[in-house]
Length: 191
Image (tube, rainbow, N blue to C red; front, side, top):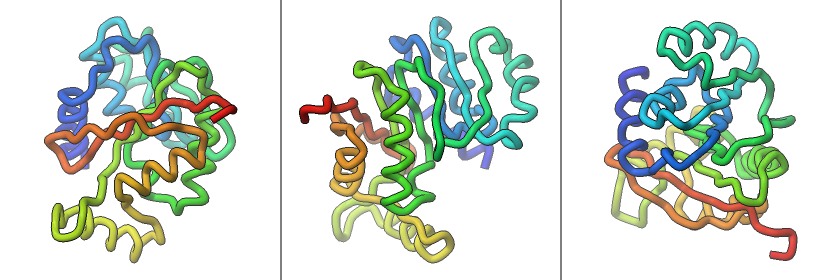
């Protein structure tokens, strides 16, 4: 898993420019591998690693060994309740595919409440392709449905999900990995 994550992190960094971000909040960021790679690639960027208390209990040592302790804050909590405020980018990698639509909308709304109007949502997930194309996404979708009652989603399904949570999907960026980067901006309350 770590080898896959490292490869996926490099693919994400090649496809999306985090260097202009002042602060990246990694929501459900686990042990912080993706955030660590972002911070190493972008020396002016700060980070907040957010996940459940047992998950982030020993992450401080990992960040310190990478020389990132001063640039990355570790916060424990549940994204079902709240997420840290103050980020320019709210990042979620492989989170939404674990949840059905209702729970995913709740998670996204929790992020939306913490975000400023100018912050950006970056969701990194598989995007299921059109019929008879990109079979890996469909196989992963079946696996998620059978094992967890969760799902992979199409581009339209991500657009619908984001819209229901108060975001406008602005782009979908493919990476050289099976993952894509779905970018959203908070919609004003008038939209």
